Amino acid sequence: MSGATTTTILSEFICSKLEPSILQAVYNKTANDLATQMRSDIKALRENRPNLEKHILRSLAEKEDFEQYIEYIHNPRRHFKFFIKNEVKSYFTKQNKLILNIFKGNLKQKEQIVCNAVKAATVAVKSKSGDGNMWFRCFTKTLTDELKFTGDSCVDLSEIKDLDFLENFLSDSLKEKMTKLQDGFKSTDDIKMEKCRKTPDEHLIEHFCQCCWVQCPFCKAICTNTMEGHPGDHSVSFHRNTGLNGWHYRKTTNLSISICTTAVASDRSFHPNSSDNKVPWKEYRKAGRKYANWSITPDHSELPYWKWFVCRFQKDLETYYNKTFQGMGEIPHEWRQYTKKEALESLDKYM
Ligand SMILES: [Zn+2]
Ligand SMILES: [Zn+2]
Image 1 (cartoon, rainbow, N blue to C red):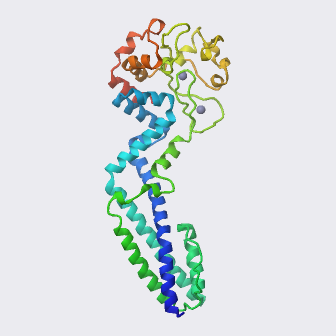
Image 2 (image 1 turned 135 degrees about the horizontal axis):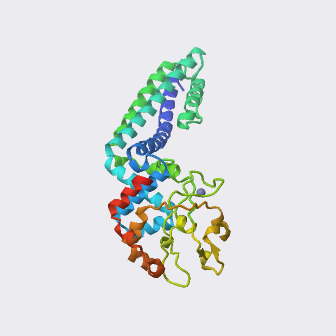
C-alpha cells in the first residue's frame, strides 16, 4: 500500500474511533459543568444541606401538600432527591440556550484538544525522524487521559513518511466530522443527558446527600452532621413536636404536642416503642441505642414553622395517625396565632 492510501485509511479510522470518545467526554464534562452552574444559579443548591433543607421546607409550605410533607418527615433522603431532580428539571426547561451553549462549547474544546494532539505528534515524530507507527503511538498517548482514546490501528503504518500530509489530511477530515457533529445539536432535545456517565442530578445528589441522615427518634428531625457515619452524637438545632411522628400520650389516642428539647427538661417519662418500659425524659439515653447516640439539650428553641404546620395540617395528621390532638395533646392557643408568613420568616431567621 502506498503512504497516501495508508494515510487515508488511518484518517478514517481515527475519525470514526474519535467521534464516540469525544461525544462521551463532552457529555461527562457538560454534566459536571451544569451541576456547577446550577449550584450557583439555583438558590436552594447554593450552599450546604441545611440551606437546601430550608428551601425544601419553604417549598413544602408554599405548596401545602400533605403527602409531600409526610414523605419529607418519614423518608427525607427520598424527598431531598425528589426535590433536587425537580429543580434540575425546571432548570432544563428554563435554561435551554445556556445548556446548548455549554454543550457546544465543550464540543469545540474537545475538537481543539484533538487538533493540538495531531500537531504535537507530528512535531515530536518529525524531530525523531519517525514513521506513521510512531506517530500513531504518540497521538494516542496524548489522548488517553483526555478522551480515553486507546487502541491499535490494525494496519502497518510504516509506509507513512509524509507526516505533514497526514497532519493536513487528518485535520481536514476531523474538521469536517466535527462540524457535522456540531450541526447535529440544534436544541437541548438533541442532547441526551442519560448518556452522561453521571447526570447533573446525580452529581448534585452526591454532593448534598452524602451526609448523616439519622433522624431524631422522637420528632424525626434530621441530624445536621455533614459526614455519614460520623463519630460522636447526632444533633440538630431545632426539634419539633413529637406528634408529627405519631407519638401519643400513654393509654390515649392523643397525639403529643411536646417538643424534644422541652421534654428532656421535664419530670415526665416516656415509653420507647410503646413498651411497658418507662424511661424518664431526663435520662432519655437509657431507652436504647437509637436514643443513646442523640444529643438533645434542654432549651426552649422552637421553630414557629412547625407550630404553624401542626395547626394547618391538624386534620391530615389526625387522619394519618388515626389519633387526635385532644386532651393532653390540645394544641396551645399560642400556636394558632402563627401565620404562614411568620412560619416562613422563622425559617429565614433561624435556619
Ligand atoms: Zn427531636
Ligand atoms: Zn448524625
